[in-house]
Image (tube, rainbow over all chains, first blue to last red; front, side, top):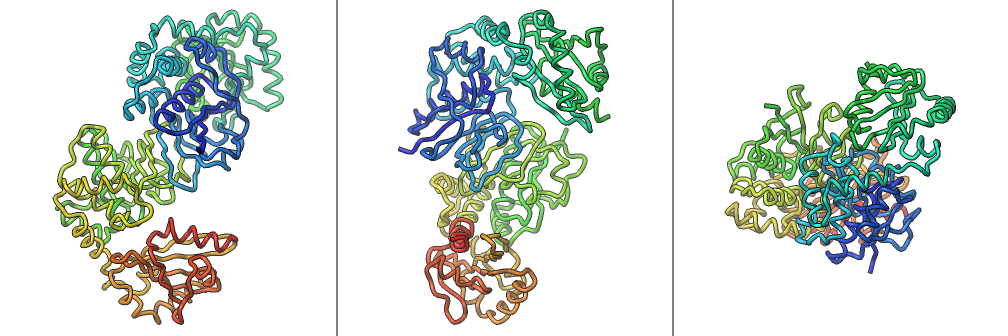
Length: 310
Length: 310
């Protein structure tokens, strides 16, 4: 029987891994020979969720094999975020919650994108639409994905639908949303084995803002002070990155998962734009507390882009 | 209250017009200040459906006004098929059944594409999902759209879902699917007021096939012989088009809506490829009957592309 491979984006996060596992489960129950896969290493946060619910991580792939008939993309649609040979495979479906860009097919397909905070929220609806019950394990994976993408329902990307799905799934999974969620986020925020290079690269994205080139790296932490103990090393490494990549600004965002604030470190010629964008003053260490700011996409990139393009 | 404009593609067909009207009706019933629009003239076929169910055509627009908050695209997603200023407006939703290409947004949106034969089939599902009853008039518009896109359920693009929706909607609309459908198609196939230029341009599309440049024009007719009465004039005009556009092949497809066959006329250096693609011989008038061929997209372009690229 022809096999359908289901996977999320590169540098997989909890939503990408859990949505691939859950949608493969739903598809199998609907009679499709589906198999989940992943395009990168499993994070500590995701591993905590998998261990808690006794589920194995999907197999790691680098390219889609020639034995595969169809692929299904979850949690992404932009080709540069997908598997290397994405242009050579037949995409049967896309289930996602991001903007649409750099996506093209020769034939019509099943494409479902909704402006919610998490792919898992859409999948929870799809179980219902297909009249398939969500098992305890799958409910655990789906609620973990929502907790991760919404920073325990605190992110401005989180919608009413995400919140309702999270409480409903937590009950099926047999966990208390707050206590389980915090433990999972804390597992992901354990940065004790990370080098300074790891911290600055594990979740870094580059953006063009007007004529400026801006890189923003983000990590979640339980105690932001722990990270900034190493500020001298961090400063040195960022200075090198600015020089190598010819950046106007490097913004290092350490997000406090307990208080839902971020302490940012801004370096580069454009650091004044951070003060302007968030109406704060950088201290003598080039740091500032951004109250209530947790989302790079919705709170940081937008405000900084405005500051650079005004 | 902010207004949301709903429209389909340029050179509107029955699915595009009826889907804009139907989705505006559903949205209004869900509390959205929605208004349908169209980007071009109403065809005779569409006008027959509108008249039969006593519904007015949506207003004609050329660009989206500055008073509009959001737009919703139905029956298309490629920007070159949409309104001129599509890049300047906020797209809130897309409901479609075509391939995805040349589409991009800054933010996540609600995007639903399914591989069915007609947008109206998806809209019929959406009424159900939202628990809103389909009125007699809207059922009439939706079934008309399915009849049009599927050539009365005969096209290879037509799926089981389209067939089921068509029978269900015909009952609500109080029409017999076959008799009403044939009358509507016949109204569209009334070419008595069309010039030869009209016939060759009203539904013509250009394709790159390997190194060859191929143009394929299609018209629906009740009696294909009526059209070919004017073959001398048609030949002269096609010869001019081939010269002006430097075409390798011009294929004129006259589709018999009663027998679901097409009589094609092939002119240009590449006319032998038509014989090869469909395993037929062109007669002394450069014509051939293609038994069971009605879909340009699924039956003609694919076979000709293979012949040109082998």
